[in-house]
Image (cartoon, rainbow, N blue to C red):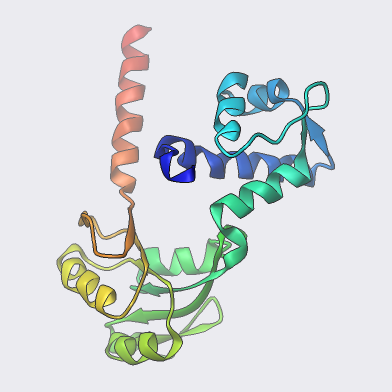
Amino acid sequence: MRDNISMSVIRRLPRYYRFLGDLERQGITRISSKALAEKMGVGASQIRQDLNCFGGFGQQGYGYNIPSLKEQIAEILGIPNKYDCIIIGAGNLGRAIATHMNFEERGFRLTAVFDQNESLAGKLVSGLPIRHISGLDDYCRSEKPTVAMLCVPRSAAESLGHQLVRLGIKGIWNFTHYDFGEMDGVVVENVHLGDSMMTLCYNVTRNLEEK
């Protein structure tokens, strides 16, 4: 059944998870689809349709049990799996991700950080010593991380991606400005912050033109 669920639905689940977490921290334990929709700025029917893709979790007249729904969305997303991941590239972006991303709340466990700059080797990032990239093969073969997060220059991306596939990596979170297409047995999430920024530019432009 889940093979037929559209990616647009899947991409909305983390937002539901985030809002439910905020409500849970406020001590709220129950909410209707209408109230949740108002807080999120979406339609109540969309929330019901999205969740019904996975069987539906609310009760008519009662709404959603927030801790239970949050836990079930976490299960759908695979968050309890806590996949071991590595970061390749310890520049500004790589260090920021290592330091500020709450990995375990999002289904991962950061186990190593790599960089090609020998002068960074041994320096700590988020409590982990930066390793030289020359040790990547040995590390992956012995520790078998599931996911790699790429924060390297575009010029290094393609060859590094193929290397990671050979090493058994199953998922790549890619910040390199190089778009990976389909890769055998590997899930890729290409992240382009510039695309999001240009979308913002478009919407600001349209908004100002309407005034």
